[in-house]
Structures are given as C-alpha cells and as structure tokens.
Amino acid sequence: MNLLQKYRAVRAASEAICQPLQKEDYVVQPIVDVSPPKWHLGHITWFWEAFILTPHQPGYQPYNPDYNYVFNSYYETIGARVVRTDRGNLSRPSVDEVYSYRKYVDEKMAGLITAGPDEQLQKLIILGLNHEQQHQELLYSDIKYILGHNPLFPAWSDHDIDEGPPPPQPGSTSGAAGCEFLSVPAGLYEIGYEGDGFCFDNELTRHKVYLNDFQIAADLVTNEEYLTFIEAGGYGNFSYWHAEGWDWVKTRSVSAPLYWHFIDGHWYQYTLAGLRLLDKQQPVCHISYYEAVAYAAWKGCRLPTECEWEAAAGGFQWGKRWEWTESAYLPYPGFKKEEGAVGEYNGKFMVSQMVLRGASVATPAEHSRSTYRNFFHPPLRWQFTGIRLANKTDRRSVGP
Image (cartoon, rainbow, N blue to C red; front, side, top):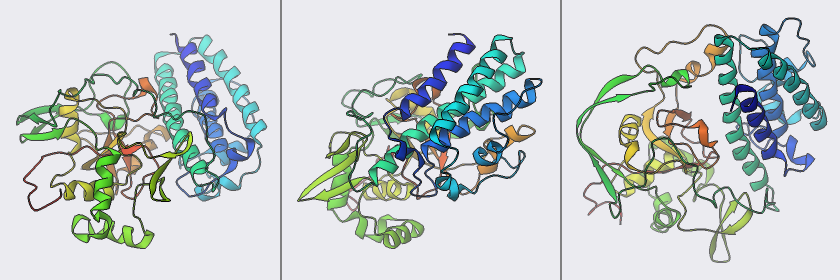
C-alpha cells in the first residue's frame, strides 16, 4: 500500500466508525474526558491542515481560519483554543460542515502526496496517520460512553467490537497451554523501540534494565474472576486500596466496573451492541488503575511494571485490553522532545499518569506494538482497560 492509499484508508476508517451514529450523537459531551464525535472528526482534519498543509503547501488557503481555534486540542505553540469542557457546546460548525471540511482537506492532501513529499515530510505524514488512528480508538471509547450513559442504552451497531478475536499484534503468541503464570528469569533486558518503522517519541531511547525474576499471568483477568472480587466485598474493604483510590470509591460510590448494571438479580453490561447479560468469560474491561491495584492486592498479587510487561510480551497473547502497569509515565533515558508543536505530543504529559501496555479491541491492528506506551490518570476507565497480574504469591491470608 503506497502512502496515498494508506492516507485514504485511515481517513475512511474514521468515518466508518461514525457511520452508524445519528446526527444528535455527534455533539454530546457527557464529561470532560469524552469529546463529541464531531469534534474528533474536525480535530483530526485540522491536524493535517495545521501541521502539513499550511506549512508545507505553498499558497494553501485554510478551509475556515476560525477552525484553528475550534479544533486545536492542546498545542500551545499553535495558539488559543476552545476550552476542552466546551467542545460539546459547539453546535456550529455543523456535522455536514465538518464532513465538507474533511473532503476539502483530503483533496489538498492527495495533491501534496501525489507531488512526492521529501523524506522529512513523509515522516510527518506518517505521524499524522498514527495520530488519526489514536483518535479512532478514542472515537470507539467516547461513542460508547455517550451511548452507554443514555438511559435508553441505544446500540451503536448490532454487533460489539469485542465479539470477534482480538486484532493480531506484532510479536504476540498464545499463552502457554495450562500455565496460569509464566516465569521470567532475572537478567538484563532491552526496553524501547528499535527498528526502521514508526514509533512515538516516548518509546525512545532503547535502553537496558535489570529485572529480578518474576511471574506474569498468561491471561487477562475475566469478568467472572472480577465478579468474585465484588461478591467478596472488595469495594467495601479499604485494605486493598490506595488511600487515593479508597477516597475515589467512597466519593463516587463505585461498586463495579464502568457499564456494569445489576438488574433483577443479574449482572448486565453495556456494550456497543446495547445492554447485554454479562459475558463472564470475556476479559474485564473499563477498569481504573485504582481498581486494578485493589483486585491485584486481593489476589495476593501486584501489577507488572511496564518493563516487565515488555520483557514478557512475547510469551502471552495481548491486544484485547489496554493493561494497567505499576509504572508512572516518565521519560526514558535520553528522551528528547522535538522542536515546535510536534514536541508537545507526549513529553508534556509525563506527570501524574500511569502507563498502560498492550493495545485493545478498539486499537487499529497495525497501530500497536509491544513498545507502545499509553498513559492515563489513575481514576479514568472509559478506555478499554483491563488487568494482568504479576508475581503470584502465597494467598492463604489474602484473597480467595
């Protein structure tokens, strides 16, 4: 697939995710972390205009100069922007106008790519493709939150994205048959991206770390296993929780994962196909870091560090859930931010967040790799997040 074909495929995928929506669904913003689908479609189009066309296409005329203010997300270098909480107040531009904006930019981008961009510009275009794929995952997550908090529990589609097998992930294998935990020997391991393909700057630079021997679960925690934690009173026992997590549970009256509903004696779960009986065999999903840690403590275990996860990733299947790790999101040795607006992409968020590894069912198949570092604040759970345990220990006094 050449660069223009790749560009068109990625752009079409964003619109395909939104195709089942009603117009009214495009503009809803229930919480600050969820952006309206219309804003996503506008922002990922603005990215091409602001980062590629305006600086690199002589004589380019922006579709609408006001869109720089409307669709800028967090780039201080580029200028003022709509406050994040106000994205849902943007009744204009309309959905139809945003699609017209996309068509205009796509035509201009096709001309630029056909003309043959130099190597540096090609790299920037590939960054733009990966940026749009990040927003495709966010579109799934945000659409699910929007529809899942509608009291009618409307379906996005007649099928859930969790119903098929996970997308194939580079380097992944099935877990060892009959082996609940995999043993990884102590030693020096190389961490971080290495190769000629694309990676984000936060995956660099590759470096060595020493790891003690450890064990890591071959499989993710399932809904059935997590339900046992709930039934054992896990949400009511402070001893499993960080102090901040325990405050979160009490303040928000949390008693189950996001989208779980106990109705007439049965557990249901909202999916993109609507409200369904809880599938107990699926990996638990939409879990905060606080919940992941509490469950691990209840089991007499812990979460893996991100280096442990990466060192062991070739031995188990991954790609169904973003997996919380016990690692704070910090720069690797030798990390260096790029100059200009592109340098704001990852580095400025390296504070107060935890690292997730492994991609999810909402991640474009070719967008993930074992070195990919996702990151979120501990209480967030609207993403497709799950749990993999590490270091199984003596559980006679803790957990079942």
